[in-house]
Amino acid sequence: MTTASRAVLVVEDDAQIRRVLRTLLGLEQFRVVEAETAALGISAARTHKPDLVIVDLGLPDRDGMEVIGGIRAWSRVPIIVLSARSAEADKVAALEAGADDYVTKPFGARELSARVQVALRHSAGAGSNGAALSIGDWRIDLEARTARTAEGRELHLTPIEYRLLQVLAEHIGFVVTHRVLLTQVWGPGSVEQTHYLRVYMKQLRAKLEPDPARPQWLLTETGVGYRLAQRE
Image (cartoon, rainbow, N blue to C red; front, side, top):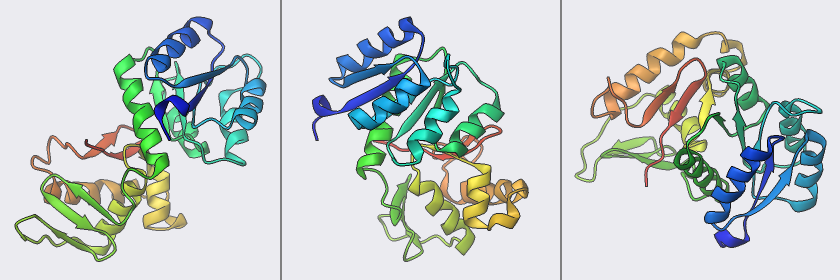
């Protein structure tokens, strides 16, 4: 599918922000569909079947969380929240409701453009397939549970470390909340045990990052979760 044939649904009541997004996305040859309310946004998603949705949370008729829930009831289309709400609780709630990413206002054009491209690549399967990935010099096969450099140097990772990497790889480029990671790696009974994540992320960084104190790949989203960075 070419970029020009892709549609982005923008659910935003602020006309100025819609105009900025229309210009930004138009320069990248996206077809932009606009909706000013939650109800219109949910309807437009069904009518136009967009390739990506950008939604504000502060809509005049309903909270944008209802747009996320309404779309997630039938579609896995990538959803990026674009909101002035910057509290960690709002970010966590949106991500756990089904949003793929969260960008706070005011936003930079380059950052938003990059997030859009990552979301579309992930949706198209151009990111990690969940089986293998590269982190720096390491090539990691998550199914075979092997990690080695191009020169053949091997690294030992524990089963938990492989599973943690796998969950992050399945959402490469996106933040994964603490709750999702704990549930998928340790089980539903461990959702309050955030110290598990701190311990294992520290171990993974020590093994995989060139400078664990300044991670380039295994990134912290403070108070929200972790993100496996996607590099070109």
